[in-house]
Image (tube, rainbow, N blue to C red; front, top):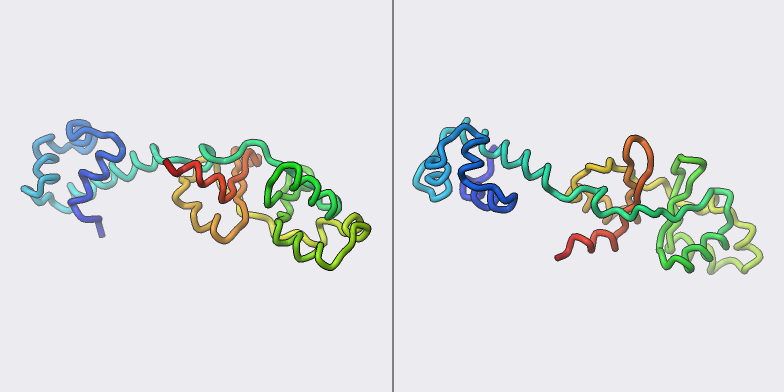
Length: 184
């Protein structure tokens, strides 16, 4: 099922396309595009579908990608580091979560919430003894560099962070605060 025809103009304007360019890309006359947008003409299903496919394709190419908003510098810890190491590094960097790596592989994530659960029941000596591997959460989701940001909203809501990969290498991290970059 296709969207309503009234949304064609809005979609076209959103991606900065003229009626003439849309007509050229779809094989429809500029006059026909004008008539469709003004409600004076009802195109065939095939024509409407072609118009929407072109608009969707161009919109996905022009939309913000995960790689555009991710933080490129990733603070990391290793699973054998101590809880005290995590606390110190997170305080120094003013961050609320950090991925845990073994070599180049992500094995988990440590979060403020996870730390709080353990520091209430431990003293400084114990915090130095407790290894991150004992308290870390599951590995955060990893998305491709070119993933549209729109698809990340639900991941960010349920995961403390999302890692961004490019050619199978982790190149960035997106946290809830990074999504604020989208607000104009």
